Length: 110
Image (cartoon, rainbow, N blue to C red; front, side, top):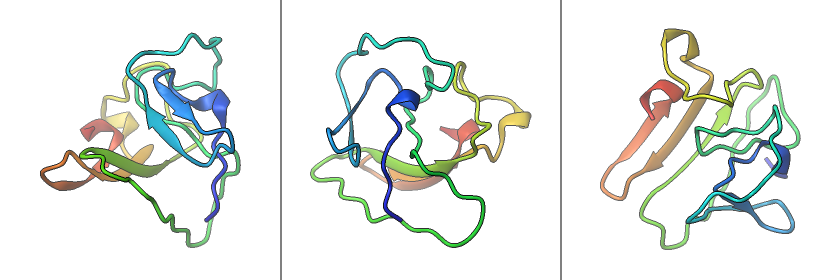
């Protein structure tokens, strides 16, 4: 699936490319306006277009990065606090690596 990232949802440490098709984790938080759509605890950014059904896949280039993750989230995922507690399960799913092992995670396991 072609994904254009939504800058209004990006965590302040995430920097989006000008074409909004790639993202990098920065060293510091950017000074961005508070926005109810913005993630401020979990390092997340949503795509501008969502989907509710069907099959989807992403081709991801991670370069020389040791750690990375890619995933999907429900539009209702919490954005202003850490996603903890049993009621938050299955709101964010991701796969990634810490450089040593690959993992599939939900928001409560990150």
